[in-house]
Length: 117
Image 1 (cartoon, rainbow, N blue to C red):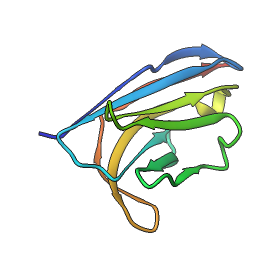
Image 2: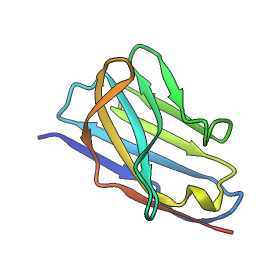
Image 3: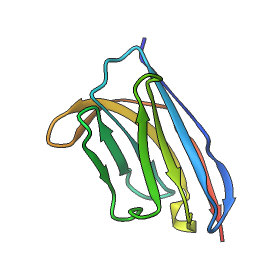
Image 4: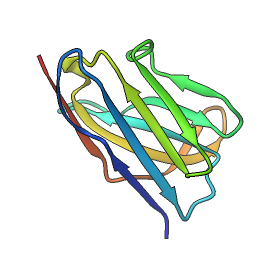
């Protein structure tokens, strides 16, 4: 059974930081990443990282967010600094296979991030 379990979401004031974690089990992933969906918005890929060392960060968060992974723990992290109100969204962890980018196959249930101005 494939499971992706996120943690670390919450409420923070603008300018603050949060670190999201996601543990993947039951799936031999080749890449992992984070997506988000704000109220009334389409889902956006925030960042992903591959087992081959390739990493991509969305321009909307570049310089503020960092993605990392610990394959020994099957865990991917998203360090979010200098948070803004527009970062408010449900954040989803995903795992998948490498293609041109990361082709997400499995998703977690999501963790809410709320940034107040």
